[in-house]
Length: 252
Image (tube, rainbow, N blue to C red; front, top):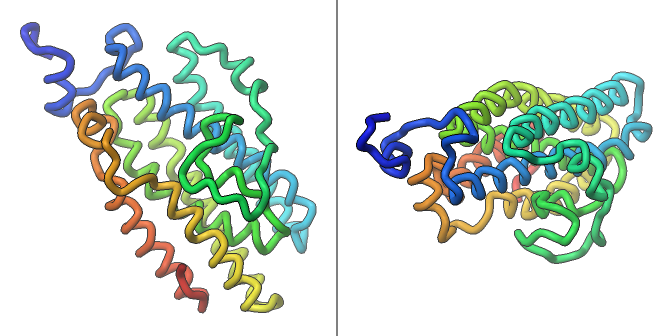
């Protein structure tokens, strides 16, 4: 960065930061929020899926589910280590929230968060059995893949590197879910799986946030976002729709 260039101008022109020492206050707040949303969503998602492991129809499925729980927890830990560089008490953070807490299945909270933590709203809804969990994991896994592609280019380099390492792991989770749905279609009622899609589709869609976020421009100026919410949602809709169509299911 040139000596006469402000950090704001540097970031707006595509610059990257590498240490908490040179992060301005507003940038720090938004960066910590981004990390908290990811960490809380991974830990809440892992906690919810852990309760479903023993409902897997076979050993292979249970091993895959256990691996997903392990890897999501590890992914949260990877980003939490970056957060720890900003002075966050990582041990307390990991144990402070009720990660298994859920709302009623029919609760209507839209994109809002509860008092529990910063998890995405979709992780406040309970899973109902193996088939429901696998469908949710497919739709949300594809959403996470889209979101991580975006977050892998954030202007805070240590976090971008963490997200780039996490991205293929989460993409594999979506692929495992796709395989799981395909196997369920061999023995389960297709209508039941379609009903699970209908339940989770709008809730996963809401995880992308409002299409006209008032913060979008300021986040772009800081290099913490590049694509808008609507653009990311449209990409997910196309990818999830294609995945469902390949399985003989309908989107939405």
